[in-house]
Image (cartoon, rainbow, N blue to C red; front, side, top):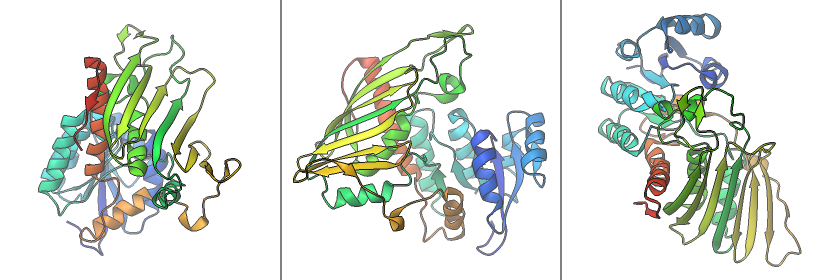
Length: 345
């Protein structure tokens, strides 16, 4: 493996839009980091990706061959969830650090296998890609909550609405194909991660889902177009999270939380925070202090951790991934059972 001061070599498995437009450009800016191999869905697409985005890299048609390369330090997984667990387990067994695109896995069982493998290899750095949703104001929100801005929070509302899947004549998106995406639904996993980071573990869910366009191009879709989740938190707070891909002309992603002393609202499209306290006349915008603003530095953080694995633990870790996959799994189980499901914390 590369030492702290030598060049780190990365092999990429799955080079979709996020890898091409976000990860690759960021990695190329980090000193002493080199993308040496890319394996996409076919050798031809791997070759095309290398030519256009990483001319120094060698294309591969078989991800297992890439993972087994002895000079690779990091395996960077950019495929849909269906390969995350298989590739991550193989990479860890081969002694490679692992970064995987979100959502973590197809289901909770796979996520737990990945976490167990990471625990067996504590000298290797593992990380799941975080969502950009709420990134800019996350530290400030956590500060406000730690300072009891709300008093005792008792009610949460979250809406994530879009019209992405409203057209019944459109072909199925890969996120609508459960053989690729597993039980992941719309932005459920993203916001399960965000709200638990801010408000602590979700302990119970009761979910209902609906399919609006069940067949596309002869393909039977089993991932719902909309889902509503009643949830309880370890803190005692309760709430409702509403997700839809069939909300025409809507692009609303917003969180509201109410306590006995105040309220906070977070608009995820603008990172605008509205808040008010009991003694005030009305809620108003609260500016994020510049020193608490966060920017996207995912690639930098992961590489820094690989160079100093004993002192840096990049987030979200595989443990965090398991935590939000517990919620995703519980929602699927609740829909199947038609009842409330308790989540082990």
